[in-house]
Image (cartoon, helix red, strand yellow):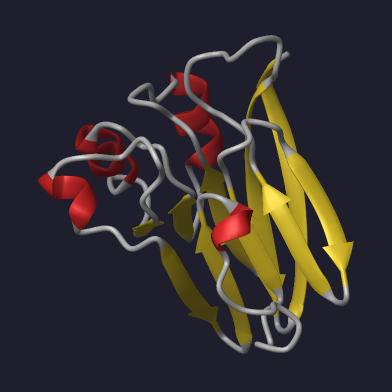
Length: 153
């Protein structure tokens, strides 16, 4: 089984609790609004990282990030996008098994038409009364499941 650690909307703050949760991941996905390249550098000490550019990611380092990434893990294809509204394909028609997004700061997980939509929420500075959270995607063969974890309620 592969464990893909999911994090989003760190806004320059990488909490120790998030790092602790992500340890043991085979791969880490950051769904944007990173805001500081040091966040990606720290994550890369745990596992390979794929990150997308969020609406608050600016500067030369952020220009190197794509708005959408497509990843293949065995026979499973996933898409990563900061704002779900920017996804440029029909996930079931494109053969996607999961779509990872951020932007809303609200953790959520739903399945529609055989595609798992997972937003790990925000792991950075607290926004309003929303939880601080992360997530994971588990891939075993062609089976995909997800989990959300609140770090602080």
